[in-house]
Each structure stands twice: as C-alpha cells, then as structure tokens.
Amino acid sequence: MVKIKRRIVPNCKDLDNIGLSSLIQRLYLSRGIKEPKQIDYRLKHLHTQQQLSGIKKAAEIVINAIEKNRKIVIVGDFDADGATATALSLRAIKAFGHSNIDFLVPNRFDFGYGLSPQLIPILKGMQTELIITVDNGINSLSGTQAAIDANMQVIITDHHLPADDLPAADAIVNPNLHGDEFPSKHLAGVGVVFYLLAEIRSQLSKNDWFKQHNIKPPNLAQWLDIVALGTVADMVALDANNRILVTEGIKRIKAGRTVAGIKALLKVANKEILKTNTETFGFVIAPRLNAAGRLEDMSIGIELLTTDDEDKAFMLAQELDSINQQRKEIQTEMQTLADSIVKELNHIKKLPDGVCLFHKDWHQGVVGLLASKIKEKTNRPVIAFAPENATSDILKGSARSITGFHIRDALVAIETSHPNLMQKFGGHAMAAGLSIKQENYQQFRLVFDKLVTETLTEEQRQHTIETDGELESMTLCLAVAEELQQHGPWGQSFPTPLFDGWFNIIDKKEVGTGHTKLILQTPDFSKRIEAIAFSIHPNAFKAEGHKNQITYRLDINEFRGRRNLQLIVQDIVN
Image (tube, rainbow, N blue to C red; front, side):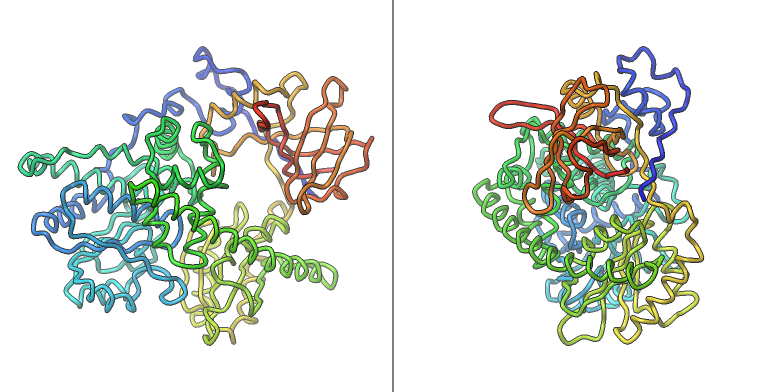
C-alpha cells in the first residue's frame, strides 16, 4: 500500500520580491532554500578548491610530472562518473601542455573495481611514473602499495566513503576524508578531479608555465558539460555547489558549446540540444555511456568524450547505442525472472526485509539496474548477485537501498560481525558493491535479512512517497510545466516536483509493452489531460468512469510541432 507524505513548507519571507511564482517559492522552501543566494547558480559562488585537504600537494606532484615530462596514467572507473572524470583529466592535462599521458580503465570482468594489484604489471608495461585515480582508489590499499613498491607515485582522487585505514598514496583528494573542511561532501568523482585540475591550473599560472611555453591557459569551465553529465549520472546529491556545476554545464550544451561526444549521444537518441536537462543526462545520455562499462569496455565511452572529430564521435555514439540495446534485452530477461522470484516469496512467505537475489545466468554488469528496479517495487534494501565469470566461485553483488537505511554502514556491520563472509565491499548510503564466495551466499542472505529486520522502522517498511501536494485545475497547464523546467536543476536530494491528486479515468489503453496511455479528467470536470504511465499496466488502474489517486509529474509532449501538457504517472495510490 502506497502512503503519501506531503513535503513540509517552512514559513519564510526571504524569497519574496525576487520574481518567483508562489508555486516555485513553495517548491524551493520545501527543498531547504532559505535565501536567494542558494539559487544563484553563477560560477563565482562555487566553493574554492583550497578547502579540499591534500589538493595543494596533489597539484604539486602533477606539476612536477608535467615539468619533467613523466608518464602520467589516469586510472578510471567503468561507469559514467569514471568515464567523464577520465575524459576531463585527459583533456585538461593535455591542454596544460603535457602529452605524455594515457589512461587505463580496468575491465570489470577481468580486474574488478579500482586500483587493484592485478593492474600493476599492466601499468608497468605502460611505463607509468605517476598514477592518478579518478572516482576510485580510496579503499585500494593493496593496489596502491603495489604501485609504490613498483616505484610509481600515486595520487588518489575519489568521493567514496573511506574505511578506517587509508592507502599509502603520495596524496589523496576526497571531500569525505575525516577532517576535510570542504563544505560540499557530495561531489561526484568528476567534480573532485575538476577541483584538482583547477588547482593545477592555478599553480601553473603562478609559475608562469603557460607564458614560458606559449600556451593559452585553458578555461576549465569549457568542460563543465562533462562535469555536469558525470555529476547527474552518478546520482550524487544536488546540493548548492553541484547545482552550480550542473546548471553551468547544461547552459553550455544548450548554447551548442559542448564536446562532440555529448552532441553525438543526443543525436543518436533524437534529442534536441536546446531541450537538454538533468532528465536528459539521467535517462538518455548516461544509460548509453554506462552500457559500455556494463557489457564491454568503458574505453569506448572515454574515446567518445575525448574526440573532437564529429564523424568519429557519431560512429562511437552509434556503437554505444547498440550496446545499450543489448543491455536492455539482457535486463528485461533478468527482470522477468527476478519479478517471479519476488512474487513467489510473497506468496509462500513474507517478503524478507533485506532482499538478496541470485541466478547463475545473470550478468554482473546489469545487476545494479536490476537491484534498483526490485527496490522500487518492494521498498526494501536489495542486493542482486551474479557470477564473476563462468568458472569462478565468486559472486559479484550490487546493492541498492531505501531512504534511512545506510547500505555501506550495513556492510561494515556485517564485516564486523562476520569477518570472512565478504571478500570486499564499498559504496555509499544508497548504493554499494561487494564480492562473496558462492558457498557463503545462503549465510550472507540470512545475515543481511536479520540486520535489516533489526534496523528498519515500521515507517521505513511502509512505501511512503513524498509529494508537493495537490495542484488546482487552473495550474495544470503548459505554462506551469515550462516554468518547472526553467527552475531546475532537479535531481537527487533536490527532487523533481511530484504532485498527487484524484482524477477521473476517461480512457486507458496499453502502449508498447506494459505502459499505459490515459486521458484523465480533473475532479471539477474543467479539464481533460493526457497522461502516460511507464511500466504500469492498464489493469492496475480502475475502470473508465472511476477515480484513481495518483502521483504525477508535469511534462511537455511534443508531436509534429505541437506542444501539450502531459502528466507522467509515477504511482497509483488508491
């Protein structure tokens, strides 16, 4: 049963008289906006890089490598955040005048995540002298030590939560280090390396490097499109600092000042550059970019984001689009099986509080998406497992959590109480990854479920949806939908406006596979509005002529040059 909880709107007059409508004021206030400067997204309001501990030392090491023409290798991650962070680093350091640079992204199927000891022979073969990790490394203790033993310097840039012990790197830049004073703890990996590059540029300028070498100092803001993409794709909280990065990045894309790769991804998806927003990043570009890391090799995505050749970019974007189609087919098969398992659990016995799912034929690159979907359907923390490979006895798990249940802390607790149950783990409050031996799966499943049962409150078990309340019939119009789009960026922890209300169902029909097209009528009978419900079958709605309470977002449907209001139905409440 879905329960609605309406967001509380504090009483505050500080947003009066700055030209906002009463609706936008209400939305901002309920999201913690108390003063105009919190929605002033100019770059001058970004936090300065000097507040990040370790950044000065890290920059000095990179500059020393540039001055001595030492071989730098960027070690990235195989998701969109890692790809954007790697591409940004390559573009910027080359623009600083250093061409002796390469990158390495470990194939997840052969090496797993991060700077592992298995990568060191490859890095030695690349004549690596300085490693810079991006979006990984904070828990790579053995890999970092192996690199140092092989006479390589290591700089770690990461945003994941550190364990008690830190790697013995030459420098670490991570806003989540204990004692770090950087005000925003929600930078994505690409955001962290953006700040490091800003410090490197600043020090090079002070050293007259650019003047001495007749190099035009690069404006790092030109690549905020890449920073914005990685930030939204990684689903980090859109706090004030991240909203500035994302807003400025989107602004550049809309103005046509974007890298060839992003332009090509929009083209293959038939999306107009002028209509780019956070949803475009999250639902259009990021899935295509992530598909490479999930099924094949993220090198394709990095090549796409670093090329300035538009023909090559389009060819690579088409390749990513094709890989993404394969990903969808694999995910659909896995989803069908997972749904049947959950349905069976519900029929035979009570659904576990902590859901663990495994099948020998599942694909480890897609289990994260599967866990997300099952979490949404069950409102439970979910871990989905797949075999590491056809011959290994190791299972790779991807965990997704619900509000209020910190999944990485839960794994820390399991590691403390059952030290040999997991091979390794890491992650955030809402998402994590882990490895276990297949022989330990049943024990892990029971331990995880017991921990969740002891931790979850009754309120957390209930499927509660936060909304922004009801909208009057007169507010359900194209102009308001446009207004909402203009006052973003909306995203993680700064949620897209979601409303609830009762509507008469005039018509409903299935479109595609399992989606529903609706014509709804407002309770006062003044308007009929088109709506679409993705992944909700028509049978889930009441019959024509009856009322349903739904949660919905305002959207704009464009067809043959005409623009109309369309509601996106998220949940059926009653």
